[in-house]
Amino acid sequence: MWLELHDSNGPIFINMDTVTHFQRVEGQRRTILVTCATRSGTCVTLQVKESPEEIMDKISEY
Image (cartoon, rainbow, N blue to C red; front, side):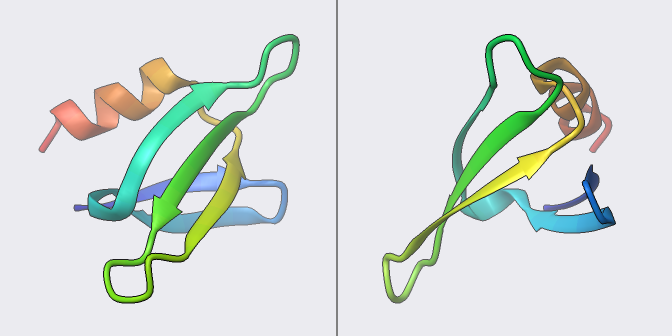
């Protein structure tokens, strides 16, 4: 499932099927998502403005 989230440059589309976990950065207004590629096993860390609660709400809309 793809979600439209926002980073410091604007909209970013995240394939939530590859996200292993996400958490809020303490004391800051951003959330870190960790994604892993299925073939190479490479992990990438992304930072978005939405809170974990907002992300969960978007997931539950599907």
